Image (cartoon, rainbow, N blue to C red):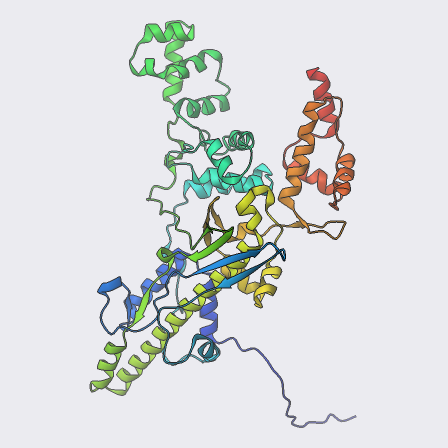
Length: 492
């Protein structure tokens, strides 16, 4: 059969992602540091943009100062639900149209000539290349097999480590802030003290040196006595030091030489450049009546203005066609940047409000009440694509009464309930398993097997497989029931 050729007209719908939209999506995914670098580059190359410096800004400057706006979460105890009243208002918008009326045309408009603002941008070139001590320590956490809750605690502890590698926070203080037991924090500190470089997470110099000596298998009672009496070494009181250690002169000299070969500040080799303070993108704090207020942090928001008076003055001057095109292009790019920054701030705030709405129990009661949360759930509630939520939480931090967390932290794996009740987060399941095994101490004759733990969890409404319980137990470095039973007999 011979082939037939012809023309057809069909109607269809398709989504065309313009270069402007692509750049707006990139801005949404930028961290605060990356965004500042990009905005600074635009200020340097676009004469129609200026940084807002408060009351000293040039008169007649245009629009686009995004203020730190907030959202109040009002919880209705009678209905058991919560309603979010989101109040987001930019200071000034372009033209006479409202934000809602202008949004479709702004996002659909193709670029207006010239080079786009974000093309050729190399964010990595503006970031420090040296790896910080914090990044080095956090990169080792996956090797410890920590639970979700322990990872959060480890991040908080890491943030409390100074440039020398010393832990500058009390376990009780962190436990109170996160709503967990101080013994759990202290136990995690001991595990973190095994990270590289040896000596980090020490509370003082003797402990730092002791960790390094223990790694070399040289922390005997005499060496420990030397560390307990470093003030005698500083005063060069050798007779008193020799007596305290119970050694002769030759042994003491060797011990002192070993101590002097250690590193008093193990973290000093990292982060030679000053470390910038972590500035959260959002802030959440409690309000009277049990509400939560979520606000954008004004310090983390770049503030730019479109200088319309300057643009009008240039356009009234006699210009060649190429110069007029340049002014038109720069004005369009300036307007696009202002709108994109406003849209970015709105999106991040809406996502944060939804997260706080769903994780309010964690903020109120502590880490064990962290609920399971998926990107799709937040995206569905906000009527956006999950990739938009993913970009909005990437590299964004929120300051809460329990510390500063990356928005990604609030998304946890869910364990289904077998009674159609609310699902349970993996972190809370690990906490229950740990509590069950810990209860064995009160009755050494009862050692719970993984099968027995599964049965007990099922009875409490949690549907979980035996291999999952085993995986969680091993991740928490808890021995098997056989090993725990043998340890109990040995202890008896």
